[in-house]
Amino acid sequence: MNWLLEPLAYEFMQRGLLASVIVGVLCAVMGTYVVLRGMAFLGDAMAHAILPGVAIAYILKGDLLIGAGAAAIAIALTIGLFTREGAVKEDTAIGILFAAALSLGVALISTMQTYAVDLSHILFGNVLGVSIADLWLIGGLSLAILVIVALLYKPFLVISFDPVLAATLRLPTELLRNLMLVLLALTVVVSLQTVGVSLAAAMLVTPAATAYLLTRRLLPMMLVSAVIGAISSVVGLYISYYFNVVSGSAIVLTATLFFLVAFGWKRLRKA
Amino acid sequence: MSHTPHRLEVKNINIGYGEKIILRDLSFQVPHGARVAVVGPNGAGKSTLFKALVGLLPLQKGEILIHGESLGAHRDCVAYVPQREEVDWRFPVTVSDVVMMGRFAQMGWLKRTTVHDKDAVQESLTRMGIADLAEHSIGQLSGGQQQRAFLARAIAQEPHILLMDEPFTGVDITTQEATLRLLDHLQEQQVTAIVSTHDLNLAGSRFDLVLLLNHRLIAFGTPQEVFVKENLAQAFGNSLLVMENGVMLVDECCPPDEEHHHHHTEAK
Image 1 (tube, rainbow over the protein chains, first blue to last red):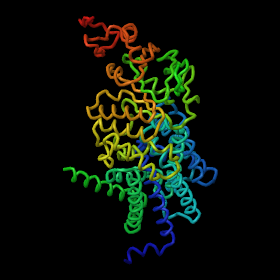
Image 2: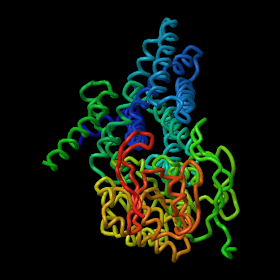
Image 3: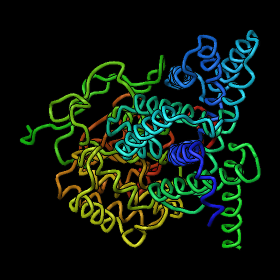
Image 4: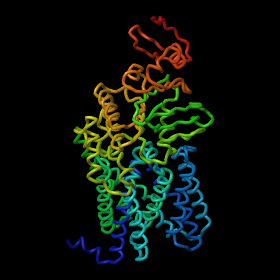
């Protein structure tokens, strides 16, 4: 038991653990739509596309999370604009913006002299550096996103499963689609601190994909995904503590292990 | 003069995609509770008309009135079963989940499902003969069963007008019969049914009215009024074959503009 409690003696570990679990659950729930709507590429792109926002915030000595948030929302809405009424295919629009934003981010960073530490935290996360204020921000944003997802469960289900029905029932499909992109963007921003932009996409996709293998309905899929996300975060953080591994990597690798087990189990059951 | 008020009015509409107009100057009125068959050759604009009727395709001209109000004023009174559902068949939903979606607009998007909603879903499933499949994943069903699931969803919506695009094409006998029984039921319930079909004999025998289209309105009226030689020739050209016993066959194996040689001699 002692090895379980020992890390919790440190306050930064308590905060890190709490932040990881919140982010794990949030990513896993939003990830359900990412997996079902085929937005995995979008999630990855979104994570990298916030780099210019972060860089600008860094240069201006502003809050990095706010810079990231502004960039993410701008990217989400621009993707929505480009793909409106099928002007450009979604993955094409994402490809263009992803590359442009990443280039802009790198260009901005290359003008700086000392960026290494903070920006490496942005890329790979720094869960042990979570402050009380960060925790409030992460918690508040996550709660808001989860409440919206719960309230809009039915409209999101219909626009994802059957866009024709959504149109005949007169749902504001465009608005909902854009809202979903914004929620996804905010989720990526929230996960900056724990797993970093490079690994945020994995936390969006892996637990949800695992849950997809294990369930047959949307709500159970979301719940199973959330549980896997939370457990991966806790286990990953302990591994990080005891084996001195970067926390983001440990969390993502744990989630991947769950996926492999679920995949193998499903295969065996079929055989 | 009819005593039933006209519940669906289509006034001088043009519909199409961008510059291309598929249906031109279309006007007709359907009384409440009628069963209307929409017939015409491939590409005549049947599916296009349905898309316009549910608001999926904007009108380029004219207007569509339902109960005297313009399209969209009634949020859930038109249900639509497309030819082939463009849904993600691997989506994690069960058959009863799919049917329940038909209730969403009525129950309110933010409200919980009530016992009444559950009863409506159960009744729709039973009516389409798929109650025993309620807990199956939608992807596990056969094509005909899937179509019945979407018909069940359409009736769970409790629409005033139900549009079905080619429900008799490429499905098993059980589904065809369930669909025909549904038509009778809809008539009892005073629900207007508008159904496109290639089967002219079915259109002639199971429907009150026939709408004959070929990029414009060729004829609209009772089957006896519509199915006369001149109208059919206008709609189908020489791809129509009328047998001695009155059975009508449409040859649709080849595109209409393609040169082909069929040696059917018209009887009579």
